[in-house]
Amino acid sequence: MDEVSAARESKLRSIFKAVTYRIAGTVTTVAVTFAVTGEGAIALAVGGIEPVVKVFVYYAHERAWQHIPIGTIRDLSARLAAPRRRPSESPPAP
Image (cartoon, rainbow, N blue to C red; front, side, top):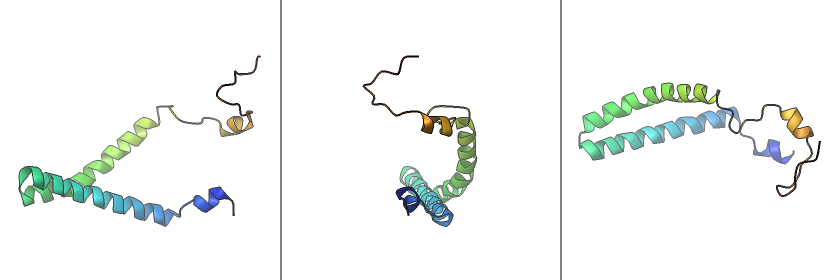
């Protein structure tokens, strides 16, 4: 087994991590809201609304990033075929 496949995670693990991260974020939101307002009911209401709102915010964020080319590799096969050079080397003359 090579290094790349050894480092991959299962889909179930990724889903589990996403769910536990979302739970941690919601608990944090409830705690911060309670600390600011001192009202348990308000903190729980915000904590109940927050995950729903953030699903839509995340979706909009992902769709917006589909239009931003920063950090994307448009043609992987061309990039892999290109010879590697050190940052200090100048590009080959045409």
